[in-house]
Length: 172
Image (cartoon, rainbow, N blue to C red; front, side, top):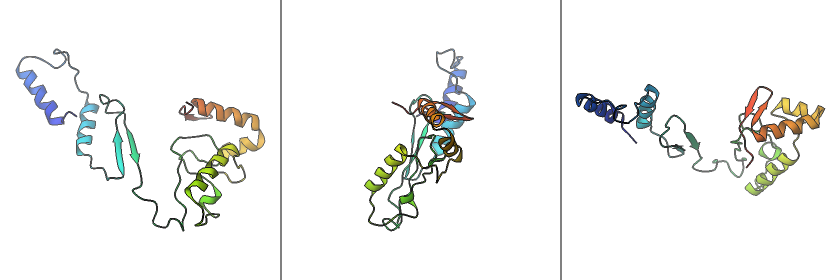
């Protein structure tokens, strides 16, 4: 990656040589690019975080990945924390990714395994439960108009708006 001070020095060198970066075929760095480069150089992420740049030439678009370095200290006596990273239109998953699944709350028992949670999540996607919602709007539509609910799910999976909320495409 280019260092901020290297950019400034390179610009000074080009100006003193009578040329400009744009005239030499290069692009002039914007204020945003200079600032993000400075911020990245000063970044001190913990070992549980990683920053990924899908396009190395576009530092303004990145993905921050946060992963636990271990399962919670209370596991298996306490359930693990589960979050849906992809925003979905679902009565039991809110727009922040929090999941409402009984075995992750009051019905958790230490004999349950991660495999139990995976099957529970699969079942939740196949049979949403409008009686215990986190997304009350989706639950109400499911209860009053199942066909509209199914259309909203399809619209959200293909990428589009459901009401005022935009969902990124998540179908392969």
